[in-house]
Length: 241
Image (cartoon, rainbow, N blue to C red; front, side, top):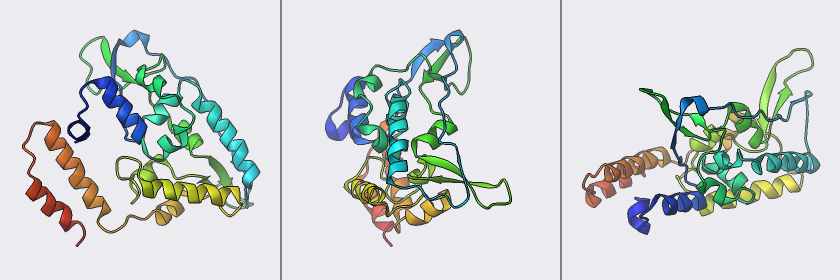
């Protein structure tokens, strides 16, 4: 759909367009399996005591550490994730690093290997995903070792299932992001668990079905099927009922 609407013709132009608009994508490349190396490990934000209430200064410290990570070669993988991760990386990661293709730490993403060559691209670990969203391990009480994962920003998975995720970064998503950032700067915001984030970003009525139909229509177009505007309009309209 993007290719047709904006008349994008080559891979470099397509990748640039996606990277500028917060749409998730990959830049797969082929390498010999012997060249695959493990990515370097990055520090987490660590553990915090029961009742931990970070302030704007704590956010600035997290922001400094996050941006330091984003300036490494791993930053391109964050930008390509789209959504909230893309927004956190957008003002830091150089888009040219994305267009240059996979780094030396690219991961083997081959589903069925039939020879020494594999498909690779940069991918983030769970630890890195948590870190980028400002996640702390906060003790839930004084007597046990139980912890909650509480963060400044929603996780990639939570964002993907929210009503603000419409494939590309939208005006509504940006307005929400700026409100949240202002609340943090003014000490009005608190850390949230995944459950709390899901509730605060609850899907608007019909959003999930709308996204499903959009994905199906895009898939049909890419696979060369005829685009039926009338039937698509009927399917999309039904999402609001």
